[in-house]
Length: 134
Image (tube, rainbow, N blue to C red; front, side, top):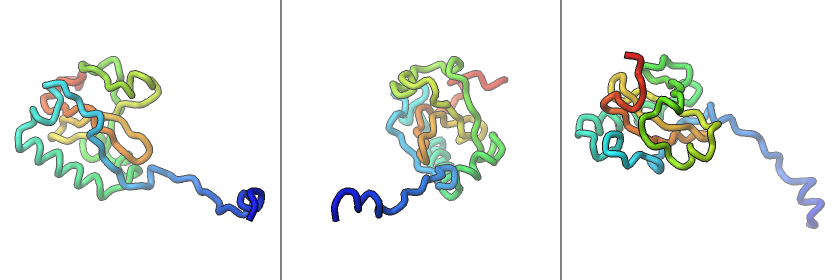
């Protein structure tokens, strides 16, 4: 089959709605900052993180976004309120939204969503990463 026939008869590529997908989670950009990194979490906080990731992974992104922000939902965080160094990916692309997902009761893991993956950048276990409106 020549190139023209392969293009003409190629299967149709359908667009994917990532909000209908279940989330994946990445620690690739997790802070190395002492206040917001995994090694500073105690065992109870680590267990809460794993439990939250497990519960979120049973939902779709659409369900997560439709949930209340202090439960299973998300909240957008302003960049200029972050009191830690931004990962390079966030420095390079100011259009990426930073979002918080509650993890330690009302205290969140904070990062960004790309397609169906949530990249965790900070673990705000002490409530000091940004102004929480207290």
